[in-house]
Image 1 (cartoon, rainbow, N blue to C red):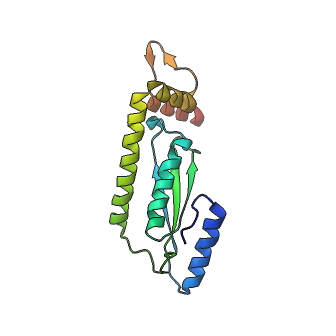
Image 2 (image 1 turned 135 degrees about the vertical axis):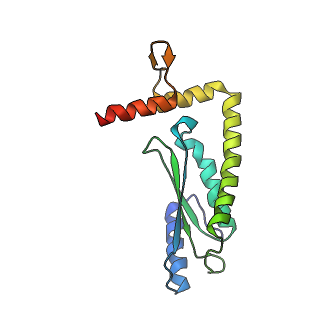
Image 3 (image 1 turned 120 degrees about the vertical axis):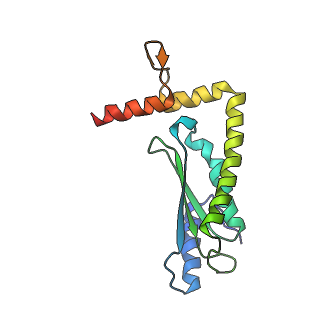
Amino acid sequence: MIPDINNPDMVYRLMLFIIQRRHKDTPQLVRHRIVSFQASDCILPQDLIPLAQSIASSYVAKGFIAAYGIHADTYCVHIHFVICTVSFTTLNLFYSGYVVERRELEKIIQEWVFHFEEKLQRNPRLQQDREAALYGDDCIKYGNAPLTAKEQIKQNRRIKTK
C-alpha cells in the first residue's frame, strides 16, 4: 500500500499506526528536513509544490512516509519535511545515512532549480511577476539606481528594527 501524500490527515494517521506496530522504543521515530531558498531566487510558494511532491515521493518509493508543508512566513520560502523512520512496507528503521540522504536531496533540488531557472529565462515576464508579488508592484528607485531584491530585503529589515 502506498500512502496518498496529498492527504495530510491520512499521512499523519498512517505514521502513528506504523510507529505503534513496530513495538520498539527508538529515540528518533521521525526526521525533520528543511529545504530553503533565498528571496532573491524569485520563488513563490506555489512554485515549490512539484519539488515538495518529488522529494516526498522519493521517500515513499523507498518505503517511508513523508509529509511536507510549504511556508512563506519569512523572506525565504521553505519546505518542511517530516519523514517517518519506520518503513511502511517492512517496519525496518530508516537505513540511509545523512550524507547519502543529503546527496539524494541535493540532486532532486538541483534538477528542479535548473528547470525553474530555465523557465524564468525563457519568460522574463514570469520573473517580473514574481518580483512584483514578492517586493511590490513597482520597481523602487532611489535616484537612478534601482534596488536589487537583496538590497530591498536589507532595507525592509532596517525599517522594521527602527
